[in-house]
Amino acid sequence: MTATNRQLLLPGIGPARKQAAHAHFEEIARGWLAEARAYARRQCELTGSVTIDDVRTAVGELPEGIHHNAYGAVFASDEFYPIGFMASKRPSNNGRMVRRWTVR
Image (cartoon, rainbow, N blue to C red):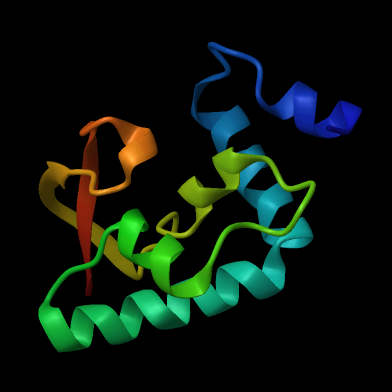
């Protein structure tokens, strides 16, 4: 992990730091994020909602070297809004709750 990535992921960083992290991820994972958002839009049109689990299953994992917090950047735009929660289907998440999203 680069020093920049470590700096962006410090605990207690607040909204400004979160926005900076998302901007950073937009630069370093641009292609993956574009593909993930395109899939999310299509899924919402077909079924009405999407989760990050759906995106990860369809698009695949982040490119090597990109911190997993970049998954949060997928829905960090005004295009998507949360509509609820559901238990994650990914075994590694141990049933934790993930947001359900839809498009405006």
